[in-house]
Amino acid sequence: MLLRLEGKCSIPSMSSILKYFQYQPNSVGYLRACFHTYGGALPPTLSIAEHKVVFYLSDEIFARHQPILVTIEAQSTAILKMQLASERSAETWKAHFEDLGDHRFHSIGMASDRGVGLVAGYHAACQDARWVCDRFHEFQDLFDRRHQLERKAYAAIAKEDEAVKTFHNAKSEAHLHKRLQHDEYAHHACEQAIARYDQLDLLLHLLRDAWHVCSPFGRLRTVAGVRSELLLLLSLIEEIDDAVLLKLLHPIRSHLDDILAPFEQAESMHSELLDLVPQQILDALVLAWHHEHLSYQSQAKQKRYHQHERQQWLDFAAGLLDHQFEPLKALVFEKLDAIVQASSLVEMVNAFIRPYLNSSQGQITQEALNLIMFYHNHRRYKSGKRQGKAPIELLTGETLEADWVELLLQHIHKASQGTSLTSSAPLELVLHRHEHTPPSQTPPGQAIIEPSTESDLSWSPMDAEAA
Image 1 (spheres, rainbow, N blue to C red):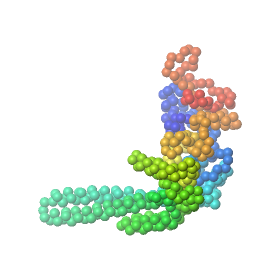
Image 2 (tube, rainbow, N blue to C red):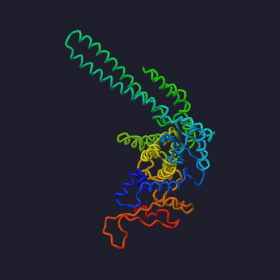
Image 3 (spheres, rainbow, N blue to C red):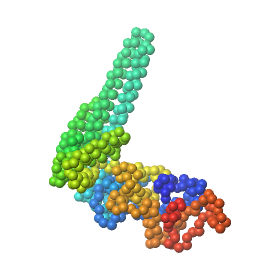
Image 4 (tube, helix red, strand yellow):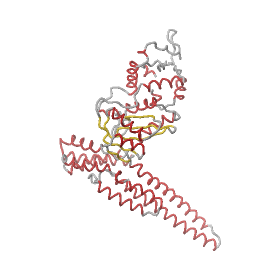
């Protein structure tokens, strides 16, 4: 389990490793059958004891043109359902979301790209919930165009440099005149290319700042204010001498209401918080949250800057609030964390799943997805704002009592008591120790005897440690 899920090894690679250390059994077919059986003992949809209000992040990932439908919970990043589907129509997505409802999840909204079946299926299943378009996908083409203009600017600089060298190598007056004209043309083209890139780069930086939930002074932004700011920036981008940009801006303008949906939530939240926290203190706490949020997305020097700013504003608020500081800070941070502006976290989960698809050469099964889902939900994050916590802990608020491997083996053991697993023998491995073996002990590399009772069909924690 550790090699497959933690190490992301392909099954043929695992077989080679086991053979090298003389573990038994080690055949590809045996390993594949065992993982299939264990994955079959796990559900494709997460189950919880009580009804849970959640915000979905949903997306599609493909394994050899076969869609995998993924829905995670926005705050915890727990995978709620991961389904291998034959197609991705609205009906398939509707059934996907209805099954989540049957498992006690109540959706107040979803963030996703503009997949036709995905959005239609969600609206059909959750008619009263809010849909938020993913801003990354909305503006991705603009940022791609910036990279293209950057490459063109560097190419124009290289052409101008070459033209200067050619001019200096001219011998006759006719050649000097001709190459001077060529040099002037290259210089003009270079200046235009650099200006186009610089203008777009600056405006996209301002555009990115306009997405922030709060202003530089800590005031939560309003829908009207963000709309005005975005329209101004889009009109300035239109003035750049580039025909491609005009085509890219048209769909953004038509989707502006969808892009502004998170700021409606921020605006209503601001009124609620003002009833509990004075304006000056609220602004300080919002700025502290803002810098904490940015610190997780920054590197080195910028991270230290945001961490310093966060602490400065927290100290300011603490000085004014005294003993009320901790509960009010927790309340404000919890409210702000609930604002979902993008579905980028589901892209992170997709990136987490992709290595398993690659190691399987795209031939993935629902049973394999069940194992991946269990591992993701029960493994603890090693870094970031969720460090030390597993997604399932963040979702339920309950602390896991054991590591994910032991929890998985416990689950399989419970499942084996209710259903027969005799179609595939259990994966129990004999460890070949590099020590002198007394005659009475098992010879190196010898497989253990297959268990004869159903209660022996699952691993024990000792088996897991040996493996």
